[in-house]
Length: 145
Image 1 (cartoon, rainbow, N blue to C red):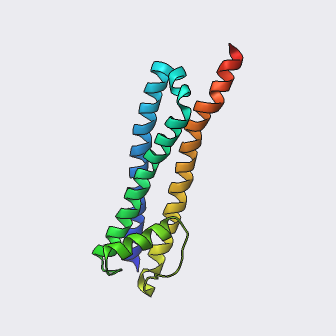
Image 2 (image 1 turned 135 degrees about the vertical axis):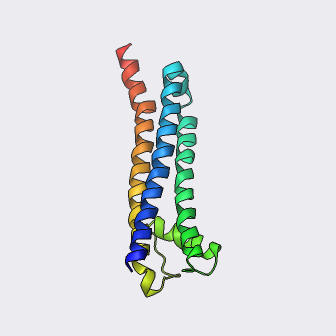
């Protein structure tokens, strides 16, 4: 049991690192674009928002795939397809319950759910940070003129 929990903790560390890398890179690009031509960026605020949200889904997909690979490699689930489905349902905390893990792996699934909860909270905060810069700051800039 201790080995499974250590592996789960390691997976959380890796997924947080993936999220941090994507966040840093994405915000760096956004800041550069904003510094070059913030007015033009705001003219296309809806498109920028859509691109940002899709971009932030990429690390979530990678995280789910990483958990699925873990479940497949360790023989917890019989196929990658089944593991990917289970992982997506668990990571998003939907938890349909149509696929369940054996007793020795149940705690690991709880860690994945907590991991998803953390990542989705973080992702939501990142989405809102950019949305605020695009929409709400634009209104404040207009009032100052």
